[in-house]
Image 1 (cartoon, rainbow over the protein chains, first blue to last red):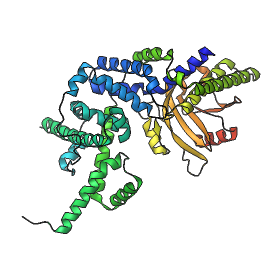
Image 2: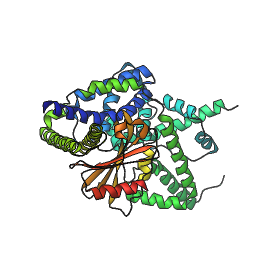
Image 3: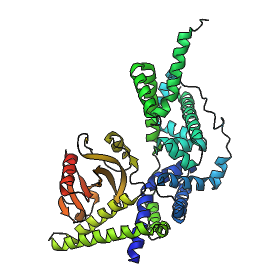
Length: 180
Length: 264
């Protein structure tokens, strides 16, 4: 009985945590920008998650909980500490960003090559990059992102808006530079 | 310099206010009344519709570009090994649930083994192993606080969610007018092969439909027909190189009805 109990319990943790492996790794690589660091980060995340599983509240979002552990672990790493010292251009709680209009330039941006967009995402400051990736890649709700990053939902919205605007502007600049 | 009339200014302000809501609209973050209002506006305003499409294209671009880092399979195996023999702490504070789940698992396994012995079959051991694994996955899903990773009853949301997560695609039936409701899906694994797990509801029961690549499964898993495991019913079929398994505690008729819809 004891063996079966343990098997069932460990199966449950595997069932919850292992399907997130690919996503956690992708997110870790985006944060660290380095394969070895991303691998270390994911391993540490799983070790911490298993150790702290008792603090996970049943009925709450396990995925957001795992991403939160990964992100906190990253912030305590050497690369993360460096990223955390980057100052943001706008205060987080300033939602008064001007609305955009489509221009011929933005149409060009839409046709930008994948490498240009990828480089522009990598250039975003970590607070913007993480919120953008959790929304667009992980398709998390604003509330889930707020839980994962431990920030207010208003901050999620303003950072997301700022991230999208900065990304579009960066791609536009890269396109202008690459055009003859 | 021409002066803007109050009407033009009001119209411009209105457009700005709609456009300011577009991101939240595309992220699915507006409440239903705001969603309907913006829907109605988009039907009448080509300018805002073009802007919405442009932003949607951006979302898709980021989604596609963002999934670019693939982990080394060795890392997955290493992590799986490190967590597979550990005893999670929640077991200690959820003894009642754990005991119930264990009893259920023992009961199911006993029934399945008993059935495998009673019914002659070319691969009795492999069949019981297959049913046991799928039953484990199904029970673990039902026991999970987050049974599915994509929560949607819309097949047009669920199917695209699997793109890039599993190495194949599949069709989902239109369930409108049927007794079945799609709850969502998640990536699942059998014998270290990734596949899709779809969760459906019929009345108060839930049905898991697993889809794997036929060639990725061991011989004992490649089969079709019905298995009555007494506690669980399982129906499996093959199509376009994919192996489907539907498993649940519902009546076999219900399982057959869902399978028929899936086969359409």
